[in-house]
Image 1 (cartoon, rainbow, N blue to C red):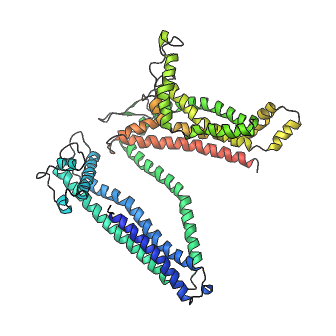
Image 2: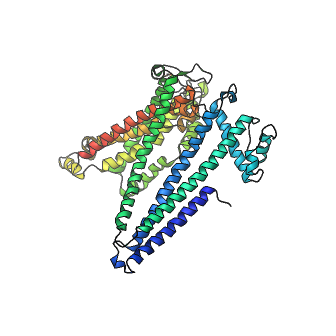
Image 3: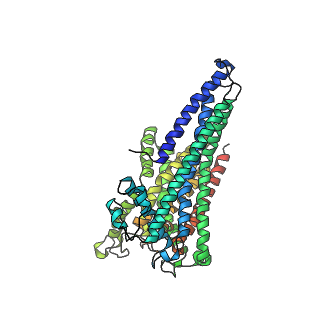
Length: 495
């Protein structure tokens, strides 16, 4: 198995790191005349310092380069595609997808020996059947390759090779420079331990900041695309319209209100299922169950939280939906003799299954919160003559109420963002209806639909997915902020 250039660069940097470690360690000991008592730090700290400055900057730049290079090349090729290359019914994004696929096919052909690098760079579409050639190496194309598309793919490959080459040069140069500088300063009076500890602190700060930076990146990526959407589609129609009817040929109705109604309706039904069951389970486990029952029942209840949502979706589609149809939708052959439900996909189907999924979210958090209520409150209530149930209703639950409300809001945020159960259990119809036995859809399922397949990111029908996602993010963020505020306030009462 042969390594790519990136693989060789990684091996070289690792070798330089190891060499830098031993060289700096040896130089420090030599500068002290072999007496390590004269060193400011232990010998290994000099080696750690050299390894840190050899590997971290080099690998950091390489990772950033690997992320940035494809985007920069895409933008360069994307802007060079002339309008004449875009056939009727196609788009610039689809042409760019073809360019990337052909470039990937040429890479595979070169790797398998079907072409040399020179032949891949000089291919002509009018002299060679590119489609058949790439088909022989396992890359299927939907149509013949035009000369302009082939030229763009060859340019894509050339820029990728050039970028990777310069990445290797810069990465190795940084590793060499970092290692040489730290070896040079590795003398007896150098404070290597302090430098290593500052480096470790920087790594810890970076890890702690990564989640925040990721959130900021997600928000900005959705925000920029949402701004592009509102440049193409009026915001008043998006926020105050009443119809959702996307049409990639134009004249689409893209209002969020029918989707928002479906999202909230299904979430409310799910919470009506999850909150009573989860809360009662939490009260039993924390106040009535013995230690053995609690030790066995709580992990079993929390297994529900580990089941993949696609499994819940299949459960809704194959079990719950048909069961509801037998009750509400078979006329005289059904249990109730009514025909209120025409199919297995309905708001009630998705709501029931999503509620089952949310039970451990409510029960586990509520159980922990109820257990956090000080025993002295219970003892005081018992001392005044209250029964166990009276103590729970009048002392424990009021004391735990802010935390329980926070758990319910967190479960609500989870319900609003659920997708797979809705796709398989609720259907795909965006409309206003109060009938829980009708099919309906939510924001998350529409986001998936709008971004499935070859998408054109210059059309409002695709960009609307980002506006939907940003609205959903703001909605769930608001619920989480409220939940965290309530939980924090609850905690402060016992400090």
